Image 1 (tube, one colour):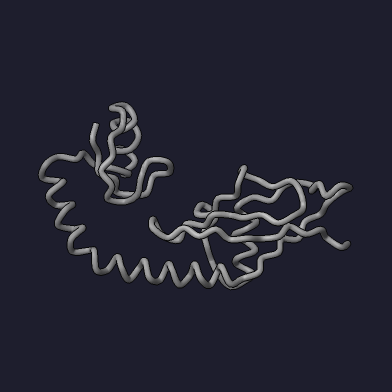
Image 2: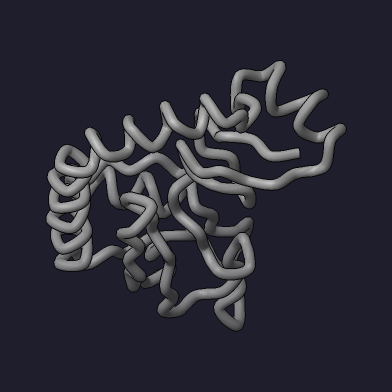
Length: 150
């Protein structure tokens, strides 16, 4: 089943992408939730016209995302966590913790756009997270997990 996505769908595609999915997934989930519409010939023509008109506006958005990515890359991010012997953390560091640390640095990014390798971190040290600012702007950002002095 060929569909045109109306919203970003994780592990499937971005807005206005034409994707091929199984019939049940499209009919029972994507279309009823408003995530996609059927990719008929007329819908494809309308999509092509909209994409043509939106190309200029899209470039401005990409430039803003790139500027924000450079601003984040300039930040020095330290996440303070309680730890035990051997550098093992009590709990773990996730994408939500990285988003909170970025927020303290003055950059607001939703946690769903941050990908921490392995899903979570359980030891002290230096790590790198991948942040998606735009579909074409993805930046790897280094951060440190340091021990709480208390």
